[in-house]
Length: 477
Image 1 (cartoon, rainbow, N blue to C red):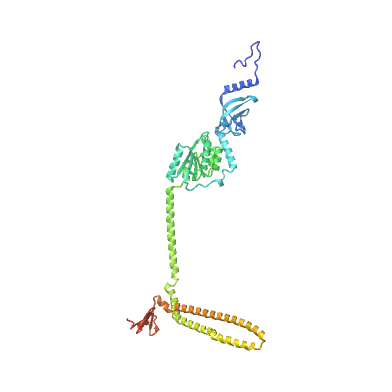
Image 2: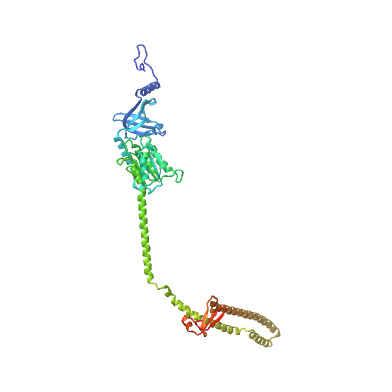
C-alpha cells in the first residue's frame, strides 16, 4: 500500500489503475482506517425504500453524511431516525464505487442528550393528540371487579411483587403475567406485542381473556422509560379493546402511554388499588346495605299493616253482611213450594185448554161435515167435472188430514215434554229434594216450625224426613 502513491522512480511510468480498482482501494482504505465509529448530528431527509432499506442524512451546520440502515438492521434500532432529531449513530464507513460516493452503514441509533429526547417526545405527543388518541370520550371505564387481570411487566423485580401483594391484600384475583423487557431496544416491541396478545385471547378459551390490563414499570431516567414513549406502544394501547391502566415510573414520570391509557396510576401499587376494591370494605358496605334494606322492608310492611287496620274499621262485620240475604232466602224458601204448585196447576189448565181443540172426535166431526158439504156440491156439477174436482178435493183432503194428524201429534208431544219438564223442575225445587240431602221439616198441628222458641212452646211435634214422618209427644221428648 505504501508504494501505491509513491512517486515513480526515475525511468518508471506512473502507475495505472482501472476505475474499479481505484474504487476498491478507496473502499478498503476507508473501512480499514475508520473501522467502527460514532457520529453525532441532526437527522436530515429520511427515505424508506420499498425493499425496506432506510436511507437518511446526518448533518451539522457545514457537512452532510449519507447513512444507510439495511432492512434486517431496522428492526434492531432502539430509535428510528426522524427528521430534525439530534442523534448519535454508530456503524462503519463504506464507499459506493458505482457513484464515487461514501456513506455510513448505521447499526445503532440513539438520541443525543435528554433535550433531544424531550423534543421528540413533544413532537410525538402533538401528533397523537391531533389524531384524537388522548380524547376522554374514547377512554373505557374500568371494570368494578375484574375476574382476570393481565399484567405486562418484567417477571423479576419489585414491581410484579408489589402488584400481587396489593391485590392479595385488597381483593385476591387471578393474574396473568406477560413478561417483557421494560427498557432497552426490545422494550417497545415486546410491550406492544403483549397488549395485542392479551386482546387476541378468545373469551372462554384455554387461557382466559383478561378483563383488565396493567402495564407497569418502576421509576427510571428518560432513557430508561423511553420504550413507553414509542409510537408502536401508544397505538397498541389505543387499539386495546380491554381497559388498560398505565403504571410506568413514579408519580413525576410521564410517558406517552399515560395519555393514551384508560387510567393512569402514579405507581404500580396504585394501579393494583385502582384495579380492585377492598374486599373487607365491600363486605361491610354490603352488610350495611342489607341491614338498611331489611329495616326498610320491615318498616314498609308495618306501615301497610297499620293502613290495612285503618281501612278495615270502615268495613261492616262479615256476619252482618249476610243478615239481609239470609232473611230474603228464608222468605223465598217459604214461598217456593206454593209457587211451584201454582205454576204446575196453571200449566195443566193451559194444556187442557189447548188440547181441547185437538181431540180426534172433533177432527172427525169436522171432516164429516166437510164431506157432506162436498157431496152436496158434487150433485150439482157435471159428472165428469165433478169427478175431476172430487178427485182433486179428495187428494187435498187426504193431504190436509195427514198434515192435521202430524200437527196434532207434534203439539201433543211438545205439551207432554213441557209438562214432564215442569214436573221434573217441581221435583227438583220441592222441599222433598231438600229432605233427601239430610234436612227435615218440623210442624206443629200442620203449622211449619222455623225457630227454637216456637218449638219449645209446641205441645206435640211432627218431624218429616225423606223416608217418612215421626211424631213426638212433647217438646221435651
